[in-house]
Length: 379
Image (cartoon, rainbow, N blue to C red):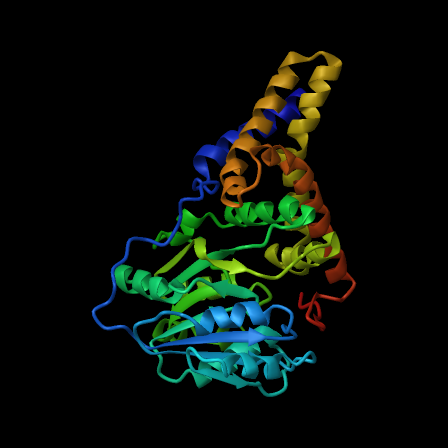
């Protein structure tokens, strides 16, 4: 147990000091100034069976205070709950111009969201910028103007913000902050924002992209089969010479409720194995890594007390303290009690099980399932 706890401690020392300071939450929109001429923007919203959240999210887009010309294009992806009709009624109230449309039937090789995005991008015409946002994301009234100002002032081709997710129920409070924390650990924001770094990531709920940069990266068609479309988009833009930026949001929030563990489980497991490129070797490494880094410290701390082994207690306790300390900024960002940071090992165990379940579903040929569609295994 001593060598395991010591290895975990060394791992946490490296993660804390040498992994892009992933745990810090200070990556917010960079300094910006209003552009001399506000460019045209098209807001593209793919929506499939979103009648539950649309009354909150869509009015926030229509109410954007944008000094230039902007319009909203909602692509109703063959919904069965009246999403398109509801959007039409909400658009009749006023605000930015709204177009409600539907894409042709989904062709092979495309995910539904990306097929809907492609249709919306085509309708956007010559708009200089495209705001790609999800139907469950609400924007503050100045969100669009700030995104465009940040892109224009800093020469950015893609500006993306990780929306603040809902943390109302007990399961949301336990799992959601860790979801963002783990994403930042996998794709450290600072490294992603560095032009010469290989890391590239974005948040699909809020991504402002320059139309020319998207075309240069191959358009939506270039990532048409991607389940993790936001990261794929960022990689495509960055690899084609574009400058990207990703940070946490202050005016962008998810309004989708996840009251039950099963809903959060599906949200994570549908793409977890895709994050590992459907590799059994990476899956095994992830399971072992999560066990060593997140589960060993509390077990070692308890075992050290029970067995009367101070060295084991010290190594496990310090590793657990570093874990909680790096998680604390995210806990505070989500306005949760500081003591919640100590529960990260339990949450990590749930994520480990979700990842294994994601692989099992893939091996059974079910691929990624979402919104009534199942994408079969591709590797």
